[in-house]
Amino acid sequence: MTSREQFEAWVMSIICISKQTLIGLREGDNYRNSTLSGRDYQSMWMAWQASREAVEVELPDKKFISEDEALIPEDSDWPDGFNTALEQCAEAIRAAGIKVIEGEKKNG
Image (tube, rainbow, N blue to C red; front, top):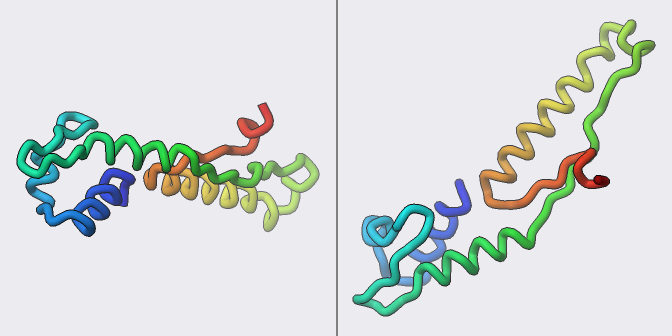
């Protein structure tokens, strides 16, 4: 579920508004305020995004195999699998609207 989908589910759970009505208030990546209810959906959306911006997940460094280890067949694929898993985890975490700090980027 994306951050926007989570936001809209949260809004629908606390305010009596249908998904169709809420989607109708979208303007690109923003929301119009509801003249009927007087609710400021754009401010809620901005606060939601800011709360997600403050959360970071630091992933472990990627693994690389040495030339000596590459000669051992059962060990040579391990780093590739680990690194692929890290990339997939980072993608899923970002999709939830959470910042990811990866290996080399966290130190520089």
